[in-house]
Length: 363
View 1 (cartoon, rainbow, N blue to C red):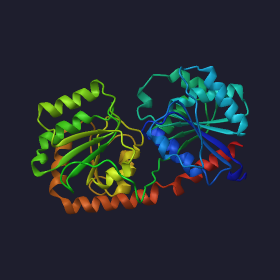
View 2 (cartoon, rainbow, N blue to C red):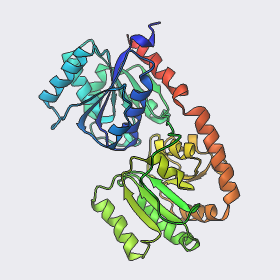
View 3 (spheres, rainbow, N blue to C red):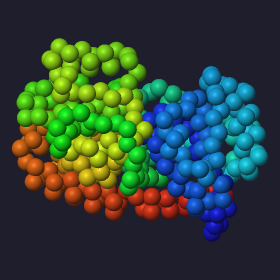
């Protein structure tokens, strides 16, 4: 077996704006620093707040790609790969296309594709392009079992492996985002403001639960594109005079500090793959309410490590809000159970050997 110290690998991602795939690309690059000969991270199209989370020993490059097929950016990446003697490109999400273009220029390069998209099986966008590109994949990583089955059935790659996400906590975060409201009564919703996160469902259920009258507040933390989705949320807050109970913060780069201020974490998406926010909630010791989509039920066991509700069910979410406002002791027990499970299961120590093994097999 080739030692992992001989592996030279780059994580390829289109953006460093906060998101699950982007955070995992950064996490992997950071964790690989002490395990392989070279760990790099390349973002093709856009930088963002997650750039600040990249550790100093990760070799970083921004390609400034401005179009789908950008030959200047492609040749910059080829020079980078040659200079640093890269053998493996680990492409996340939609960056698979750029990785395959690079492989056409450097046939000896091994491309691994990491699928983070929760609605892959019912989304036809880019399917034919992805299927064609899969001829060039050395391996496929998926973040849940249903995506693994889909890849095995639809793609031309025989090496498909389920790799769970993991999260890394910051024991002493530097904070600048302070949540408004009463201590011990803050509910945080960590997700960018777009579909399928279903923020309007959370707002409606929170209003109907009437727990705001008991001092509870709801805090939306995630990128705000100032678009129609965002406008709908803000109009709802204004029309129901909830400005002192529901707050929108936009993107924050001090997430650990934000979560330390909260008591409850929610995620009520219409669909998901493997939401990293659930792991972050667990590490922060929050009680969790989440919809039963994607891999969520493998993380949250209903009434044991959180509250699992059907997707798009406003009444179930309303009842969950009421329950958490009335059962502080049970909340504490569920939060502790989730924290224990996350710390024992979804850690770098549990996940990284699986990835390094796949890399080693490819050389």
